Length: 115
Image (cartoon, rainbow, N blue to C red; front, side, top):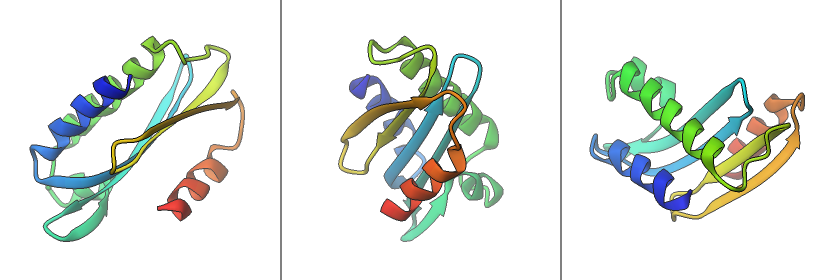
């Protein structure tokens, strides 16, 4: 999984985005992917990059889908849980799980505060 996610991150880097920190929240039926990265010396949130025309929104949608599929196909994936995956700019990946109906806002807030 680490290599496959790193390959997808490299695709983002080809658009001039660097120092990417990513959070993925994935279940069988849904996913939410959020990342922050640097572009021309400024840190942006992924959706802000699309709104600023740094990267096309369709490219981001494809990226999110690919990340979710990589996680779902991984041996670490648990079907009946919220699978939480973080990727840090140094290339490390952490995987954890929570209840499927956990409070994702709390997870996202804690992750953002850790950046």
